[in-house]
Image (cartoon, rainbow, N blue to C red; front, side):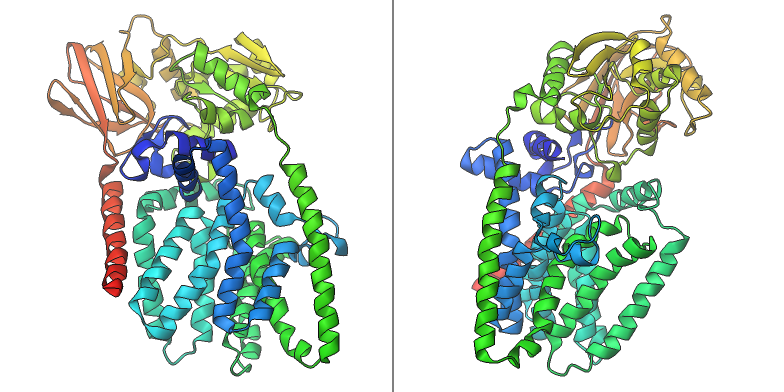
Length: 617
C-alpha cells in the first residue's frame, strides 16, 4: 500500500480542500473515497516543506509515527497517574516488546517471541502505518477526553475533538478504538454523572466526525460496511458474531465487579477495562474463531498499547512491597534488557532499510511502459503493480483501489472474475465492459508480488502481447475505441447487476461497443472534474460513459441539462436528445452529500479555532 499513499500525495492536488474526482483507480472515484487521508496528507506536506522526494517523505512520516507512539504513551500515562517511573517503564515495555506474542502468537508459542520487533514489522512489511498512526494518537484522545469529563473546560473539548478527528482521518480503525476508550472512561467515571458524561462524549464525537465528514461521509461508511459484508468470514457479521459479543459482554461484567472495588485507582480501573476489551476482540477470534468486528486480529495493535499499561500498573502494588535493594536490581535488569533490545532493533532496522533501485522493479518498468506507449488508455494492472503504478505515472486503472472501500461493487465483482475465472471469453467480456484497452498478466513465477490470476496463460493466449519482462506480459484488449464514452442502442445498456453465471446482458452491451455501424466518439478529460464528449447520436441511441457513477456528476448538451443514470455495471449513461452532431460536457462537484460534509467540516474547524482564540485572548 505504500505506493498507493505516495500516489495520493502526488496527485491529490486540491482534493484535500474541495471535491475532486480521482480517475486513476477502479474506474474512477471521488478523491474522498480513495483511502484514509492523514498519512498521504502528511507525506505531501512533509515533501512540500522539506523538499525531499515523496518516497522519502513517506518514510519520514512512518518513522515519526513509530517513535511518537511510546513517547505519547509515556506522556499521557504520566499526566493521568502522576507517576513518572511506572509510566516510563510502561512506555519502554510498549517500545521494545511484543506482549501479544504471549497471548495470541502469530504462529507457535515461544516465550522468546516477546522480543520480536513486531510493531516495526507491521509498519514496514504489513502496511499498518495508518492503523499505527491512529493508535499513536489514541493516548491523546484518552487524555483530552478524560480532562473534558473531569473539568468541563472548553479547551479540553477542542483538544479532544481535534485528536479524535485526526484518529478518524488516520484509519477506519480509529473510530472503533475511540468508542472502546470512551466506553471504558464512562464506566470508571461512575454512575452519578453517567448521562451527562455520555451526552458530552457523544457531542464531542459528533463534533470530531463533522471535521472528518468529507472523508467519512455516510455513503462511504455504507460502502465500507457493504465491502465487509462481501468479504471472507473474517470480514463479515456471522451467526457467531452474537456469541462473540455476548462473551465479551459477560467478561466485561464480571471484570467490572472486581475492578470497581479498587478505591482510588481510577486509572488502573480504566487501563484494565480497556485492556480487557481490546484483548477480548483478538483472543475470542484466535481461540473460538468468532468475531463481532471486521478483521479482529488487527486489534493486536490496540491490545499491545493498552496491555503495556495494564501489566506495569497492576505490578506496581506488588513492586512497592519489595525491598528497595531488590527494586534497584530489577530496574537494572530492565535497563540491561532495554540496551540489548536497542541493539537488536538497530539490526532489524538495517535489515528493513536496505536501499533499492525502484527503476529496476517490475512495478516501475510495467507502469512506465504503459504510460509511454498507451497514453490515456485504461489498463488492468495486477497486484503490486497496481499499488505502485500511480506513484510513478498517471495511468488510469481498472484496479488500484482498496477492496475495503470499493464504492462500485460491480466493478470489484468484475475484477474478481477477470482474475479467477479461467474462461478467457468471459474475462474478455468484462475487460471490454469496463473500458480496459490493455491488461497486464503476471504469471506464477513473475516478480509481481501477489500473483492474483488463476490460469494466467489462458488469458495471455487469447490476446496479443505488447510487452513482456520479469514474468509480466502486457496485452492489448481488442476494443473498437480506447476512449471511455460510446454511442450504443438504449436497449444494450446493462439494466441490472449481472452475476457470474448470467453474462448475457454484458455480452449484449459489449457487442454494441464492437458494432462498427455505430458512430465513433471523442472522449477527453479537461482536468479532473470535467469530461468533454463529441459524437453523433440518432433516435434510440444513448451515450454510455465507462466511468463509475456518482451523483456528483452533471451533464449538459447545447445548453440543456441531461439526466445521468446508473447502469447495472455501476457506470454512467445518458440520453443526449441530439439528432446528429452532439457535444456533451460533464462536470463533477461532489454532489450534495459531499458538499454538505465539506461545509460541516469547515464549520467544525472554525468552532475549534474559536475556542482556542477565545482562550488565548
